[in-house]
Image 1: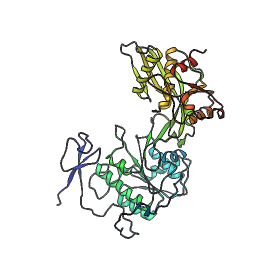
Image 2: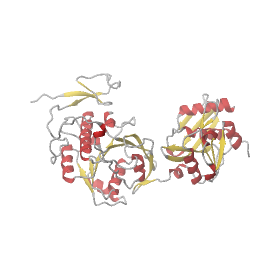
Image 3: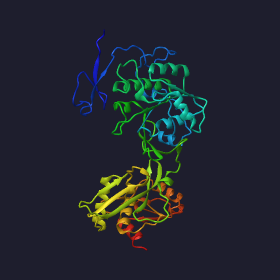
Image 4: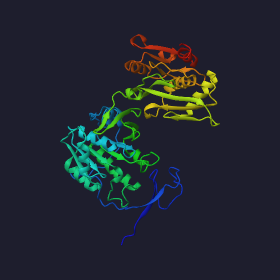
Length: 460
């Protein structure tokens, strides 16, 4: 009987060692090494080896100008939100990883894409659901496709056998943690299995030019499960976010070799699937029957997309000793900085006040252009005076109380005008070289926080 071979792998970075280590020498994390069965001899099973091609020749170095390159058109899906996040569509031969919490809608999103691409032959491989369960979920959607094939399989050898027979134009794997390769004897979902299966799929994608989507589980910390090398191997890493108890979902890019990482897609979860939200500003603005104090509207940018979001704040005297500082969706350290600026430069006594800040819609924002809207919201709650509902803000606040210019101010002004706002308050320094006559909205240029205070709270 052959001796069982084991090795220790770091669950964070994938480094291996012959013995257990308390601290990983590669990534510095503690208590991440786990023991796994390994099989060092290659048996030739499971890996991608097309039978129709001859044995590959050894590669030799080439000068860069000698490399033959032909621009391949991207696969444009019917999902405009996904196209934007990917940088214009699916690149042939790309490996795309989608991570998200359980129940957030990862499988629904990819099944919907598979049904929308009726002009392409799509193979949907599921290791978590049976074919009947996939069919039941597909029947709820309004899309019908004659070219969507489903396969309930977890063995990579069997998957590649069917792939070679079918020759799909797009391959979807749900999920990578359920696959297992016969080259590795450890259990499915282990570090070595995830790394080996991803390597086989990457080799298949690059050699055949077939795009591959992978669904990845996440850990309790919110990171994608498996070794960190998994995210290094793939071309694009997408995060599907949102509260599963709410209807809206956000698709973000944390890595993209073929486009920007600052784009964002918004969906609404319905019984028949995910609906694209073409104008997210409308859902992020609360429809109020009366004007409330402590509410302001800020114009922010997510990549090239302008969004108008609602900032809500509550400032009240502290009754439990130490004042509380709480923010949801906004950086708490930046909130403390803005409170210090208001107290030092604006003369407001906020040291003994409880401050609560919330970004409506469940978004997490980091655009410094929202500073002015946050300050206006805090002053409104402190003064118990409402801000006109037809006014929005776009400006960064410096430590001296000055209003600094922000990028793409024209896009922010256009979005505010499109949504029916009558006025927008921006930095005077950001309007240089801009033709203001082309806008049908009142643009209020300001230099300091005092200007904003005088324009809103001193004019009744």
